[in-house]
Length: 336
Image 1 (cartoon, rainbow, N blue to C red):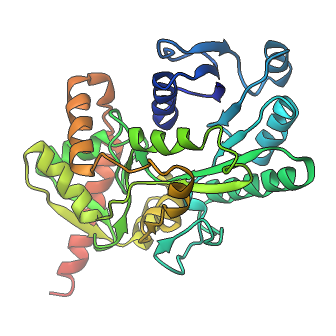
Image 2: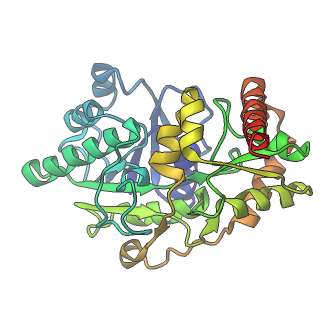
Image 3: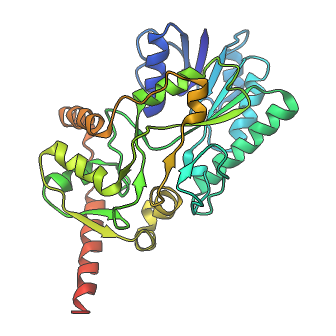
């Protein structure tokens, strides 16, 4: 079986690439070549945005499955249809579980849950991509499969709710240093984080399956944790006590527009969700997430602490957190 991955070196796609290679697929990666390609994969160095160049480099090639990991707006789908229509037996588009209805009408999410997100442009663009793809499937026979991940992490990334533009590291530093750490809401809403190796099992199981064409699936862990539990698990792995500081998502969105908490919190992470993976398991019966968060984040922290390049400071976000806490503590004293 022969696969083309557009991207192939990100958090999700790296794990997919590695599993495909382990299971005997012929794997081609189409990207700019700025990151190392896993051993055994074949590389096509190109910018997918340069359609003419990509078309020339793919001339005469066909694939069992094409996987689009970096498509975000309908124009990307239109381009891919021109490039791969008639050249693949399956086209898998990475959408997002943030596309599901916000505010949530039910905390249990199935693939039949309506798609609507007034808080986040990213999610609305993904919804528009899905709508276009399903129209191409119905009217043109384009063999699409839609996959909706939710907060997937690997050895290089720690999943959090509230962080700055440089990612997770500054929050880890605050936890290690005994500083209060901002958690959205009251910390009791449920969330799902998924290790990339588990995601890859479900994703590759859909590849080449005739039962997946024309369908949408989410792929997540079956473990549900409160946000307090997520942060407490990180602190425990660091060997320190967590000092949580709870702040409403509305307030964070209002005072932190530079961090787009309107989208990432109100449009996603502040909402309790529990994903029903039964549809995926009917097509991929061997899918059974094996990495719980305690073990997964332990492996991630071990890797991050051993690799300084993963430790990107964010003093601006650190100061912003201190300011938010200072203002709220002052407001409390006004009522004493």
